[in-house]
Image (cartoon, rainbow, N blue to C red; front, top):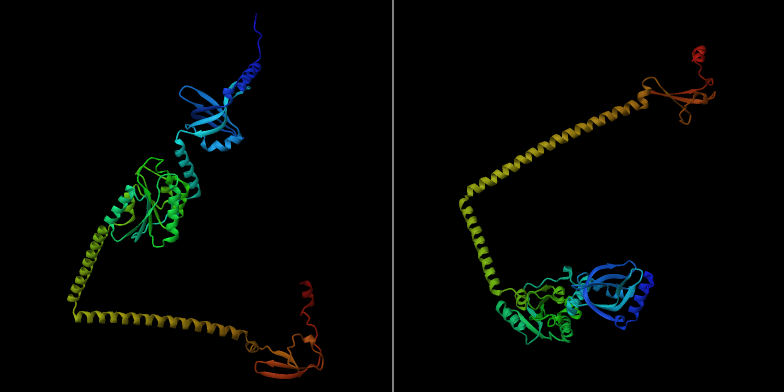
Length: 414
């Protein structure tokens, strides 16, 4: 008997019901490496989990995606918790993610990177906030375990390099759950109550990541950053880096290196100062000897001749300048006289007296007003006629007529 065929959709529906009702597939925890990560504009996340032999598709909704987005990265090993689901239109199954935890770097390493990114974004690592270390500190506070080898290394180096610097030992826990709070409290207490401290060395000897973890916690990082006193972070060995190292004003590779960085070697300083003193003494002696030789070569007659030569040179320069000044003043006076003469000629040519000397006269009435038109005079008016050589008084006997052209015919033609 032949089996009745079914549609593709019917087959996928059947498989989806089987998978959806299987209690083992309702909650699964899968470990694998992320690949083909593709975030969606809608807020969903698509990626694959793979191992050496197989791959499974994964999907995270927008609510879950917001919580795990920072942990998703190709190549990272993670543990995903979710359920198996069938995508019927595509005919494939996938893992729908409910939660995701990174395991490739370990929990502590992941927490380290997370806090590092957070504090770096806030600017706690910026070089602009770093304080310069004092060149010659008089008192140093060492914040560390009182029983650790790191303290003995620091004290030994400080005593050897600079016996004049005093040291305050501030004992703290450097490992365990209470260590971070203890270290942060010590840094804050020193800053608040000890004005005579010039520099702080904060650290411990080497160990595992777990042993050094107190210096990777946020309270310690912020206390180091907030310190008004410069801080040298000295944690572990050369290859160990902590969050406190990034926040400190200076990082030392080891506690021993921190002590070397903190104070100058007094023997080296003394040697340097002695060299400077010898160099200065030699330079001064050379200058004095040179001056004595120059004075010995000089004679009073030579000095007198030099002075007379300088005086003669000054007299000559004065005479030259005086002559130049005299010539300039004479030229200036000549130009001014020319201007005055031209101005006087112009005024003379415009003078009414000059015009009257040519035969012209001015007519005024009895009160002295200028008669500009003859037609304004009436018979019997008394006028004065002023010439260049005097004034006459006259009476109008005939009213003036309007002047006519000499040849009316020619005027009309014009």
